[in-house]
Amino acid sequence: MAFPSDNRPSLQQRWRPFGAIRGVARRRFYRFLERALGTDDGRRIISEASPGMPFRPPSGWNISPPYNDLGRPANRARATGRDDIIFVTGRFRSGSTLLWNLFRNVEGVTAYYEPLNERRWFDRRSRGGHTDSTHRKVADYWREYDGLDDLGRWYREDWIRRDLLMAEDAWDPGLTGYVDTLIERAPGRPVLQFNRIDFRLPWFRRQYPRATFIHIYRHPRDQWCSTLQGDLIRFPRDGTMADFIPFDKFYLGTWAADLKYRFPFLEERSDAHPYRIFYYIWILSYIFGEHFCHYSIQFERFMGRPEEQLIELFDRVGIIGADLAALRLLIEPPVLGKWRQYAEAGWFEDHEAACEEVLGEFLGSTRSGVIPEPFAAHL
Image 1 (cartoon, rainbow, N blue to C red):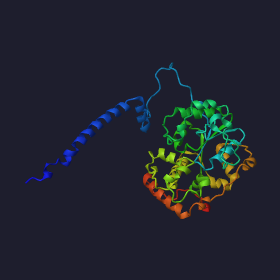
Image 2 (image 1 turned 135 degrees about the vertical axis):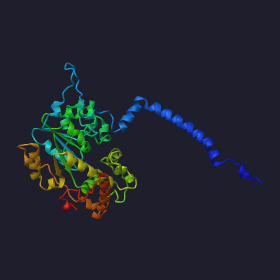
Image 3 (image 1 turned 180 degrees about the vertical axis):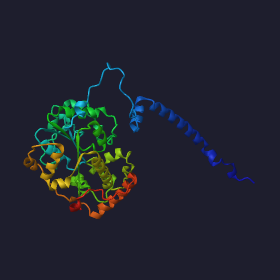
Image 4 (image 1 turned 90 degrees about the vertical axis):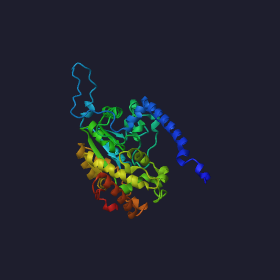
């Protein structure tokens, strides 16, 4: 006796037409992809997505042309050979603006504020006229850029969000031209203060091997609270990265989105508290700053003994005869330990310990006590 179900097609038979359709769609998709990636735009996408491109000759290759009468490029020795250049690097809200303002008020120094800022300080139409009210004793950011309108031919806004980490052999002639122009056009000793080169320090050190690099850092808990500014109480302790978007005033999500390809633990989890992403980047920035800079400044120590710290700083960079009394008037110490208004110590410790465990695994070492001392007064 035959049952009706015996005449029904099997599952494999029923799906066979869909498999044929899938095969056709797949072949068409790959033909489209092959054509698309064969275009100039497609090849550019592949190049930008591949860390090893463009081609770099191995060390030891002879890349000099064999004929002496061939044309030679303009020599960058004027910028690369100078030993009076000072670079200042620090995370957002680390005290780097104060450091820039102090250098700005030293006779014989031309101090450029955050050259990569999207307000394009050299462009009167885009820079606006406002300053951050928390930047005390700062009337403007752009005075040193007046007359440098031609910097626009070099400047790229994607410097603030793309390729935030640069190896020493990275290739960016636009950035080289931009920074060289600032250095060469400075009427005094050039000081360039950045908030966006901590992970680009390998490249900057190679491009400007005789320059002096200064690194400033601040306790991560206070620095985190400073990034929240007026939203210190509004953004909750149980908030998530998804909740943080309206409060993200200092590019935390932007940095995580770019750096996650080098540091996979920065892949944003929508349910994670943003302090963890902040802490990861803070630690990595500190490691880069300590390794690649000649001199590191702890913000809290600087605020506690400003004249002593200024003397040491100027001795390190070879500045003689600065008016320390006048510079001291530019320093208004903020309230330290403000993080207690946000959460108790245990809340921070739990997040930091979780991050340290991940960092230890990633860096292949046991990490403990990485936050430099003395911070005991603020814990």
